Image (cartoon, rainbow over all chains, first blue to last red; front, side, top):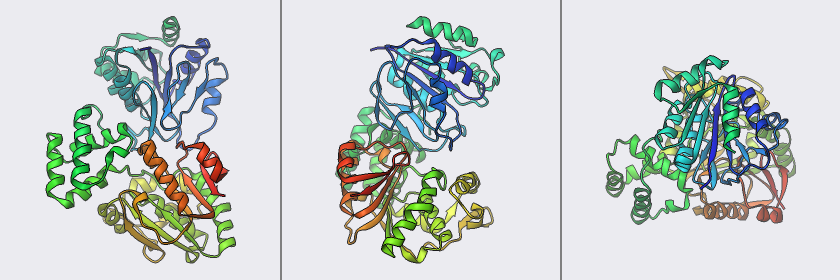
Length: 185
Length: 276
C-alpha cells in the first residue's frame, strides 16, 4: 500500500499549505488530505486560492468519492471529511468537534485507521486544540507525525495543545516541513 | 463524537444481523463507516459495556428500540443551512410553483430534529403563502416526532443560525420565531395547521396517497449505502409531480445517468432538480 499525507491547520496556516502544495510536482503517486478550518458559508474561492501556484489537482470531494493518488482533497465547508479505508472519502454533518466542522481530529483519526503506518500527519498553526487528539492517534498507529514548531506559528495554540499530548517524530518550521514532505517523493 | 474506541467490525456485523432478526429493519443498507460510528456512539450514550447489552435491550424493550432508531439518525445543527438554497426557494422556486399550481404539497421525508421543517415554515410564513401549502413531515421514529412537536430548541442553535437566516433573505431576526420559558426555548409559529406528521424509519417504506411538488431531502443520503440511495431516489421520483422539485445536500453525489434522463438541473451548486 502506498502512503498518504494529511495536513491540518487553522489560523495562520494558509501560507504554509500554499507553499507545501507549490513544492510538489505533478504527478504525485499518493493522495494528500487537507483539513483546514474555514467559514461555513463561504464555499468558493478556497480551492482556487490554493490552486494558483500548485501543479497537482486540488478538489473538494463529494460524499463517497473514490480516492485517487496524486490528488489533494480539501475538506469542504460545513462538513466533516472522513477517510474510510484506502478507497473512499465520506462526508458527515454530525455536530462540530471543538467548534470545528470540518474537524481536524475526525479527519486525522479516520485517516490514521485507514493508512496506519503509511500515513504522514502534519499539524500546523492554529487557534484551538482541534487536531491534538488526531495526531496522537496517527502516532499510536505507527504513522509519522510532524508538528509545526510553536515559535514559527502565527497562532501557536494548536501545536502547543498537540505537544502536550504527544512527542511527535518531528517539530519543524514551515520551511523544514516543505523540505521534509517534498523529499518523501 | 468519540471515535477513539470504535466497535469492531465483527461486533458491527453481529449487531446489524441481530437488529434485522429482531426488528426487521436492515441497517446493512446504511453506509458502513458512518453506521459503525453511530452504533458506537449509541453504545456509549447508554453506557452499555458490551454490544450484546444493546441487543438485549432492543429485544426486551420496544420503547428502547424506538429510541435506538432515533439515536442512529444524525441531527442537523442549524436552521437555514446553505442559505443560498433557501434564497433560491424564496425568490424563484416557491413563487413559480405556487403561481403555476395555486396550492402545493411538500414532503420532508426525514425529519430528525425539525430544523429544516421549521426553516421552511418560517420561509413560507414570511412569503405569506402558508395557506397555499400542505406539508407532510415524516419522522424516522416516535421519539423524533415527539421532539419535533415539543418545539424545544437549543438557544445556541438559534443564535448561531441567525447569519444563515439573514443570508437566506430573512426579513426579521431568527430569535423572533422563538420564545423562552426559563432556560428552554420554544418555536412560536404553529406546527400543526399546515403539516401532517407521521413516522417511518425509511422514507422509501411509506405508503403515499398523493404526489408532491417539492421533496426536501438534504444530507441524509450521506448515511445511506448505494443501494438504499438509489431505492430512495427512485421512490421520490415516483412520488413527485411532473415539473416537481427535488432538493438534496450540496455535497451528495447521485447517479448522474439516472438524473440526466429524468431531471433538469435547476441549480447544480445547490443540488436542485426538476422532474421532466
